[in-house]
Length: 178
Image (cartoon, rainbow, N blue to C red; front, side, top):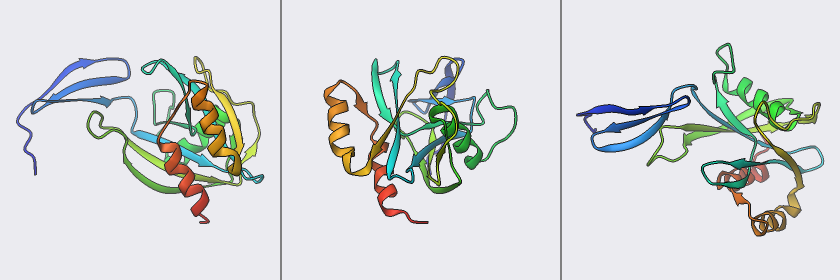
């Protein structure tokens, strides 16, 4: 067990704080309790992706719908399932009939305290436009399972980055029948 000898907040911003602990620097979110990532497959065997510009990378990124749990926009304590349903609807306009937790783990354990939970959304139906809230500029893509490898390659050639968790989610979409 590592003993914490010193812990100091180096900077506190609106969404994150930079902490130094025993000489190690990392970031910690102080406006949420975790991250939820939603792997969703439509009845037509199409996977739901989002594409959005990510300022730290200065590029558009292909991702699964995702978001913060219990962030400052939410006025009550919410479960993983409520956060997943809210984020899926906000970002994509889809609603899930059922959501199953697959697993949780660190996002970038060397630099961040973030823990993400990957969920699988079943029985998804389009009920709204999606596209995000406020200053989000989200493009929703639905891609046939069989077309995904070529589609991802094309998106990379267009200059997009592919979030590595996409590949983990795709594995579970093709394996999970829960």
